[in-house]
Image (cartoon, rainbow, N blue to C red; front, side, top):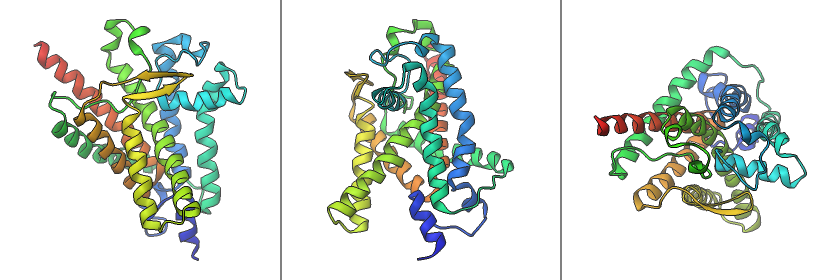
Length: 287
């Protein structure tokens, strides 16, 4: 078995690129880690600025947070982390997982900061097809949010709910932590279940894993369990559900080809673009 094949299997990727090319370098876990560090910091600081009390509140009453992030916090609280410590430990989970993947991938640790600009442009370009698809499947004139918030209306006044910054902050958090839960972790666990325990062929295991993760990814935007309680999220429509399920398949394919960093970045930039378009549509309707 070749070293390159081992590295791709370790990171969950299905495609190999020319060694040390841009595509090869930026698909490494160390690139995902260094590229997303700023995003994670922005999400944490932005959330505190939106709602400072989140640092001391119990996770039984989650507030202005991304559900996937709350799930990570719930798990950490279950193993006896304090609510305050979960804010530090949750990003550490992403860091530890990506470091472990980098070690097992046996790829170079060198990072070229100059690659971050084309990575950002790539993420924006890869987000555009999702914007187009969302507009085709949703007739209200604006794309649905990818981020899921736990009851925002209870803690943010009506004026603050309209702020673009709220959507950007939560959208960036969703881009990282939803990809962590639904692509990096869930698809890996499903592949182990289907391929190693149930004995399915690899292609069938991939198909089942991607489909189930995509459906669950879509469903959790409408109904979810967090902080020991069940919540209803975005009102259910067929268009929104189908779009998010297709987006889940798109992100899974992107993860298999380009790795976690580009996938999470694309997800985050989709949320940013979608939030910006929703604000523009709101202004147009008010004009």
